[in-house]
Structures are given as structure tokens and as C-alpha cells.
Length: 207
Image (cartoon, rainbow, N blue to C red; front, top):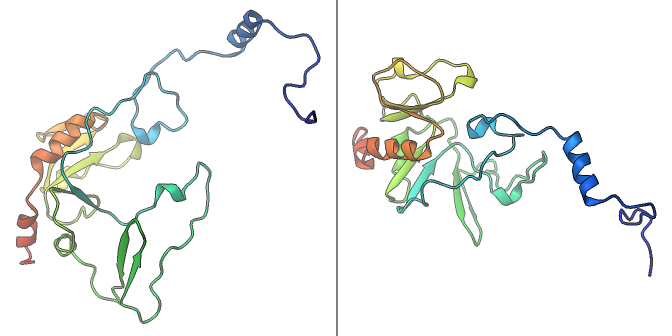
């Protein structure tokens, strides 16, 4: 039988008892004394004080999302890495269709044309029960503002009459409905309560 040169179990000295090992750990490790509640964005590098369970089941309705980009989780690792370009619109191509056994995506080149407004993009989506829109904060559709004190930026609601509710981790002086942004159930309830029919948004532009 061969013995590895760097085998961590190849130790010929006297063994430490379990009690001595536990005592050594207790003497050298400082236990966490305080519990602090933070948002997911600020939780990196921290240790959970209690098990986390989703307060809501997966939404029982079909839904879509609108955002600026998407990354497949299986393409990522725990360390920093460079991603490979999966699709590219070549010179002269107005559109490129990328397809696989799991999904397909259509990329459309604007070629100097005006960026589409939200209603135009919504009209391209398949019909679902709920569309969650991120961004497009300058468009007049009904919105729920997400405000984090750590960002150091002023809230948008005083200057945007389209904001009908706020999810935040700080106290704000407002008559609008406010929920804590870590209270997922309340955030979800607020989104559903203020959701608009897609037809209402499309009707504003005659789409």
C-alpha cells in the first residue's frame, strides 16, 4: 500500500483527546454575540443566526421579467471569472436568433433607432399572469420604489407621482404605503395589490 507524502492522516505523534480538542477550539474561537438583520445585498461574508425558509411558495401563476441582461447560473462559479460571449449580432444583421435545447433568445439591433418604450417591449412578451419590471424608472407606469439607506441616494417618490408604494430598510416621511424590504411576504403583497393589467399600459401608446 502506498502512502501519500502530504497525507494529513499520516501522523505518528500522540493524539489529542476529544475534550482537549474542544477546549482548544473554545479558547481560540470567539463566538458571535450579536444578531443583526441586514438585507441580502449586505449579507455577504456573514453567518446565519437561524435557518432561512422562504415565507412564500413559488408564485402559483406564470410570470415574466424585463431586465437589461441575463446570466445562466451554471455558467458562474464562486470565484471571479470571465464569461464567454454566447451570441453576437454581426455587421449587417438586424436580428440574431440563438436557440438550444433549453431556451431560445432573439437579439434585435436598433441600428440608431430610438430605444423602445416599455409598452412596446411588453407587447413582445408571451401572455402571463404577472410581469415584473425592473428599471424603466422614468416611464409613467405604476411603480413600487426599492430604497436602501446604504446606497446613500435620495428616494425617488417625492418627485415621481407614479410611485405608489415603497420597500425600504429605513424610516421615510411619506403618506405612501411602506413595507420593510426584507419582509418578502409584504413586498409581494404590495406588488400584487398595485399591479396593473398589461392592457392598460399598452393602451397608453395604442400598442
